[in-house]
Amino acid sequence: MSLETNITAVVTAIGADIKALLAGQGNLANLTTTAKQSLVAALNELKAAVDAITSTGGAGIDDDGTGTDVTWSAAKIQTTVTAAIDDLVNGAPAALDTLKELADYLDNNAALGTSLVTAIGNRVRFDAAQSIDATGQAQARANIGAAAAADIGDADHDFVADYNAAKA
Image (tube, rainbow, N blue to C red; front, top):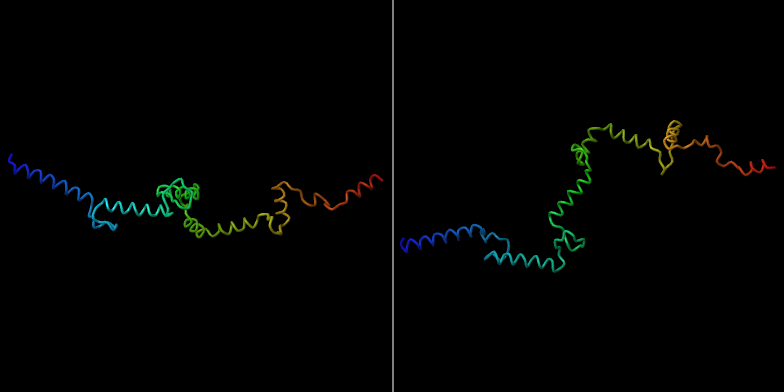
């Protein structure tokens, strides 16, 4: 093999390597950094910007931090948001696991809203006076094991007077 052939082979191999390196680094003119002459200069500019943010009290990434000068990583944020959604949904069926689905369900089942309002109205209140008929009163007393006022008698009766009269 001649010297010329050997040199041509080396130059061709070097050219192919340079072409691959340039393709791998991309077009430096497309960098959004000020430094566009080299990847090292662009990375150093980026590092300096991050250092400036963190050294002046800007947010740093710290998945264990609780201070106001740190933030979580994207993965930690995603995990936390997913857990909060799971807690909110809490095993609801897929057809009713969003507010939109619940609103649509209530819109399409107007009787359900009326039933709920009626059911809530049929509860014994402790924060305001109520008018409850005798049947409702009897049921409420049975539910909690309470006696009727008529069964108790006069709560203001003077038993001391009865005692004094009996011993006289």
